[in-house]
Length: 350
Image (tube, rainbow, N blue to C red; front, top):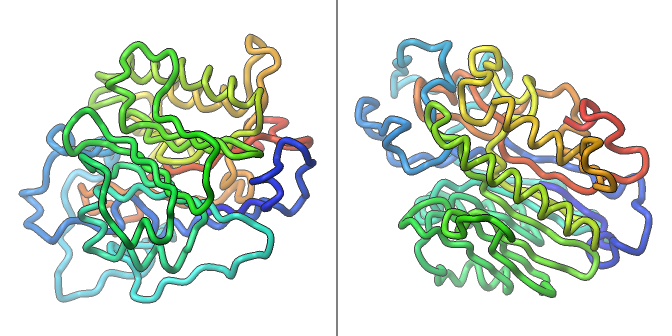
């Protein structure tokens, strides 16, 4: 969850950024991808990464674990894993967030791993508690625009990016504020069908907000070529928008930017989708453009800017009891245009 000064939302292109206008508290303990898993099934029947409909499943994300841990249903799991990560697998009974700060706009992003499933397991209670002004949902898996009064009564301006593949991916942006324009395409991409359900852009008077569910590099990195094509065209797109007015980018970016953003960096480096040279460099090049991109603006990773050393994850695989063990990844990220004094070095913001 991110709060932005209201002046940034409506007049961002015309005023300097106040020093305290961007406090951030992501509450990843119950905004993780798999906060609300499917109904309990025998472990042996859970789908392997190659079978699952989620982009984010990969067995090697837990390479340090060779056997599935057996946890008795009669023994409650600890609230925190040994590394300090929260272990809850369902939404807490009581959800609370810091009170609103007057004059700010609250933005939130959440990979819900199917709107249909989430709606049965506390989605409405989270939305009521957080009450964001703009909510980006990723991996919605919807096949048509949902008819949900609980959503439309709170967010009168909703855009649903729907995948060309049935019950797959999906990105939505739900807003209390009316945008000037809305787009669900990635200009220049050679395969428009592959982009459907991956991106939503809303333009407001003072800024653009982009929500993305970035494509995965695939098991054994078999779709890295397709992901690099996304990188190429998305980087050009966000830079082009940033020349017109400031940009806020959030969603499931499917990359762990640095070693601190996943539990097992050494065993996963350049082997597992989400933590490879191509992916981390593509993200870094948006934050801190290389000399080959003169005039391109810098961005900051909001969470990492505020918490330079903290380990906190937003995704846990269903496999190998990763949630209980705290074996996770930080894949859900909010980035924004860097202002004077920000983003001087990529390590400062990652």
